[in-house]
Image 1: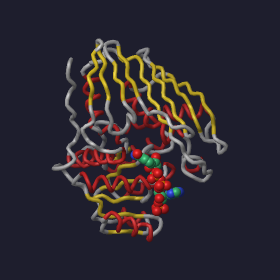
Image 2: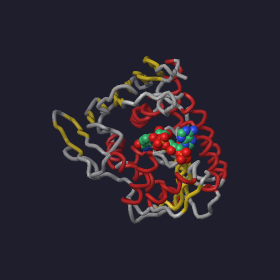
Image 3: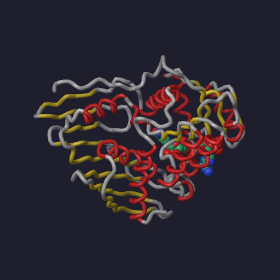
Image 4: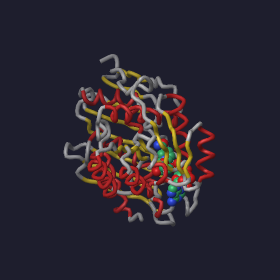
Length: 338
Ligand SMILES: NC(=O)c1ccc[n+]([C@@H]2O[C@H](COP(=O)([O-])OP(=O)(O)OC[C@H]3O[C@@H](n4cnc5c(N)ncnc54)[C@H](OP(=O)(O)O)[C@@H]3O)[C@@H](O)[C@H]2O)c1
């Protein structure tokens, strides 16, 4: 093989569109709305905050028609087709259920909940209501990831036996902040580890055994950890996370015939190389997008799934979402994290 497959991501424009409502206009919500309006046909028509003034300020900044001072008001808006939940992890379950109960399709920031049980609850509620629920695992919808999926599907790497992925980022210490407060779902594994956890699952599926070691913060959440995943196929994955150092955010996938080496950050628009028989075949990112701009691909995919009547993502299903959280649950329990 001297060339790579072409990306087959959902096009950003020209496809079905949704009228979106945003719950919780914080930092990531601003990036998400910005890239949707700049790069897709999707339109955010309403925003809700716990404070009307914050909702109005966000609406003015992003050209959004309607601002609400309460989340319940937004989900009752008949002009909203789909809701994006961008609150801290601890609020995802309640806000997801709120949107589902109002009959809205819902895209929920990562991690979809603070444990696998919450993900299962969201899956069951959405299934009963007949709406699409999806974790905002945006990395899975990026063009580069569709190329990797084709390589894996074609068996281009042979038997994949080793996967590594890391994500460390420095969170300024704030015992009441969402990185450190157990009540907000703090800790590196839920916030950052969900990416390497997803990546290992994407490549290898669910492991047979999870082994975790690491340290806790003074607030009792996981600060830094290394997690080894062992698979029935005899493959292994090693995922590392940290709240206290910035790591290269690279990933590797090694098979019996070839390997992939990702430039960091592997979960955002980035380059990778297929190495086979001494030949290095590069994939160069064509999006030209900075990190947060890549959030738009998942929204275009979500809109196409709704148009097709799908109630689960074909690329990162709710069962996949549950399985990744089961790994994080196990690792956090072994660390004694709150
Ligand atoms: N995909 C990505 O690349 C990415 C990047 C960063 C974060 N995230 C995810 O996005 C979520 C939010 O992160 P963020 O960094 O945007 O957080 P943030 O800036 O703190 O914003 C979260 C918003 O949630 C609302 N909220 C509702 N209940 C809250 C509570 N009990 N405590 C604090 N805020 C509450 C607040 O808005 P109102 O009070 O105005 O309603 C707040 O502005 C997290 O789950 C995180 O994992 C994803």
